[in-house]
Amino acid sequence: MGAKKASEKLRIGIIGCGGIATNKHMPGLAKQDNVEMTAFADIIYERAEKAAQDFGVEGAKKYSGYEALLEDKTIDVVHVCTPNKSHSEITVAALEAGKHVMCEKPMSKTSEGAKKMVEAARKTGKKLCIGYQNRYSASSQYLYKACRRGDLGEIYFAKAHAVRRRAVPTWGVFLDEEEQGGGPLIDIGTHALDLTLWMMDNYRPKYTVGSVYHKLGGMKDAANAWGPWDPEKYTVEDSAFGYVVMENGAAIFLESSWALNSLQTGEAKTTLCGTKAGADMMDGLRINGEEFGKMYVKTPNLDAKGVDFYDGSTLSPGEKETKVWIDCILNDKEPYVKPEEAFVVTQILEAIYESGRIGKPVYFE
Image (tube, rainbow, N blue to C red):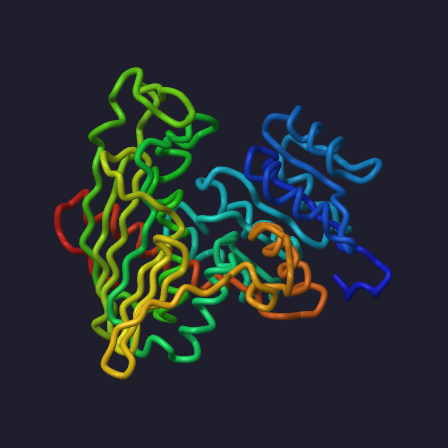
């Protein structure tokens, strides 16, 4: 596929037209002047039709299977927005078909599947990015810059937070272990872990100890943000926790839940402890340290221009993600979320599940 002329638009194909595509990917793409959505695929054909009607160009193609969409040589980019089980299969096929790929998080249900995605991207030379949009929030951008400048020193302990008291998603296949690979750990814990590893710039895990709980999913008529869940369909965990030790001795505690009797909640947040200072996102962004023999807490004003990813931007993190992704393709830049980084996230999540299952630490090769 040759380079696009400045006047030409990138042609986008959407595979999976459910909630994440409808609420994040397609609205974000619709705000870009240099793209057009020309094809839509979903196993429920009516959803592909609705997506084409709402977001597609005139004459946009609709498919019930992704294979036919990938055969269209005019498509430059594919967004994979399907359940976790099929991320790897579809992404590898799309890369081999000559498409750049934005795949929704998590990278894959398994580390084996994620590895195949990394290898396919390297082999084909096509760009692959994973949808960790929380990197683009104002607090994440500010803290990342502080970490890279060395303000925190060596970050040797961290916490990755993804805790909900009662917010179990009851739609789609969220409660289906076969389709998703897990519950809150792989759904929202993945965001918190990605943020934490990215801030630490540490992707070399040594071992992990995990605890995975199925304690509340069997409740009938449970209080829940989206109404009671069906206990018969609740086949994933309701909470999971992991303690990860890195090769350099740093440690990360990851907490995740959809249902937990806790008033301390918060998701897609990180706490960092370094030799020079610390930081957390639990009550806005706070940076703590000591100076002149006194302790301080700094709370940056993240509403000010020059702090957000784009000066004065009103774009949501998901919309910023899309803008940066399209710029990456058009100007041949490295993906903001590198597939090798997302692979390590999947490795650790899988190890936490495995450790919880066998009751022993899991070591990484």
